Image 1 (cartoon, rainbow, N blue to C red):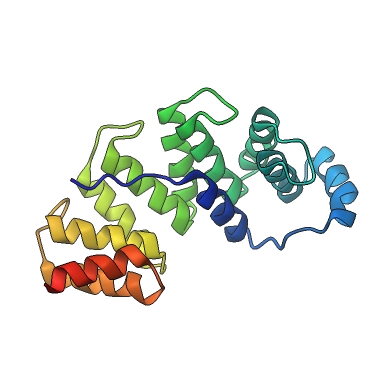
Image 2: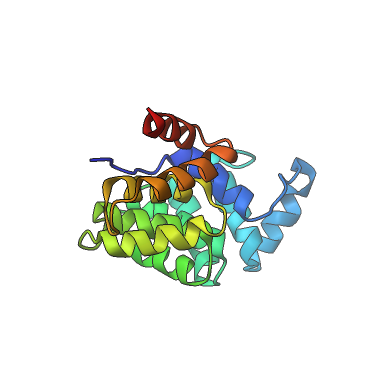
Length: 196
């Protein structure tokens, strides 16, 4: 059985990119710090990322979590996704699968393709909730329909294995192809294996 897992540092980059935030130059750091102190959600997130990565600020996961969590509570979707991941992995906060699930659910319900993928993964693996392939399929499909390549691959896996949906090799191939067309190597590999 395939286990779908998070890849921390790659996802941190993905959270940052999904925020549509350009890398702030070091001259802007004092402004960002002032805005974060004033509670501006994207500045809190930016400073949290800086503390997470040790880029322009000391690497401090606890401080990173605190700042990113404040941003998440202000409905900043990229922060919600990252708080979920930090709870999932216990980075800067005590590991709490249920809290991770809840943050992914909040983000997913707001339409975040990344949040939908993470929620689907939680349902698939039973993270913070009992495993439910039908729910995993539902959320992978929502994310995949927004063009999220990881979800497209994972939806193909579910069709291929008949998890949460009737087994359908044609649909599996379609989703693997969509994932592959975005450059997702796993999608390309799965498409190739299916055609053999």
